[in-house]
Length: 240
Length: 337
Image (cartoon, rainbow over all chains, first blue to last red; front, side, top):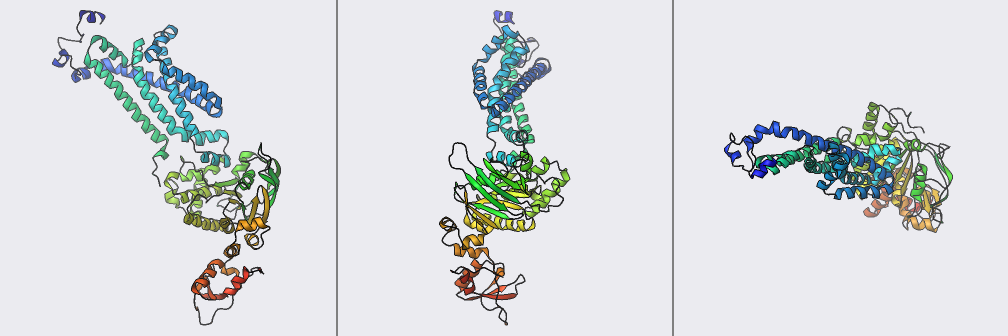
């Protein structure tokens, strides 16, 4: 590909046998996209889902624990917020590059950066959700003889769930978007075909990978909405 | 406490409650919020704690389930000190109803009502049966309403669920902190009536906090008037209205305490004079009517005698205007049937 750029023209696969659309390198050639989906895009899509899933999963585990600690021990909120906000401000390209000397050109490097970006939103939303539990529900629970642990498990966490899920939705969509940049350090994902296409100038591949990332974000968001409705049926109950 | 073993169906366990020189001093305050409060509440009574704000009525109530820790003194339930009881166990044995209700928005009405039974480890079918029974008792529809969420109910209905929840494990004691205070007057009146009817069926011991003297007179079998943390008078509504202990109580119950007193009694409580032989002449009222309503009717109709009807609508006797006005006159004879 480097040589192709040196020769000046776009490198388009199977140029001679390609369709008119491909030969003219139009914005998007559906026939090529569908012919090459399994080979070019499917594995990258799977990698992308893995990158995102692991990042949000680990990010949630850390943020949730941190939020529980901050909820019971108020002093913990500020230091964790500061750290989470600080890493959030690091430009993503720089963050991935920054990790390379430490953990190499590995998925670990990518995940450390991606996880770091989820912390702020997941921590904030979980903590806010817990704090916004109506005081009267908490008092009723106490007066009925629920222990602190029972109040947390049976009252506070279920009531914080919509806020927690809202955080997970934002973190997921953001991570899907950011994970394309992770291809910069060669860990695959939908960023890979995009990087390749930027270098080769092949528009269809560029547009298709971008569209797939957007589509993935929309589908993931929709699934999370369904999950939230399943977990929190009361949020849909009609008002009197 | 005695809740877990209660038999099906709801049988109305009731505890004897006593405050023994109970005192609460909040840290940093010089005067106690509640000072040496001693008060005995026999089983199945509705004791209303009333007083202006800052009188310590809610503080006194919350000592009972240890939402507030006493500084000194004691509270006993059936002779046993609450100080020695396990906190969560104690609270599971005491129903708690408050103005903001505090239903759990994420639970159906049934799960809300079943909260304490679940904590006590009741089997599912038993909780379900109890919820159905309570819904009928508090005037909700067990078939329609049990599966709905709190947000789907009106304020009055929510408080009915709140009351049901506070009795679900047949708790022998109920604490009610201005339970109807946030409701509109018509709904409040209906809930008060329904609660009194419910209390007749399931006569639990109730401690009821309010700042509304009319509500106190209506709901209480006994009224404790508090002022700046001290008990000023503890007596039946009738006695408090007839013989206020001091100026403060007289002021507090209001200048119209004579008329208020008429609300405590119904025509059934009076010794009636025989009815006219030729049936009902002139205005008539049910024997369930309060003396206040009877008086009002006589004044409105401009008559001096009223026919009193029994449940079937037959004339039971008559009552004279003078009989009623004499009750609130300077002599204040005791009412006797």
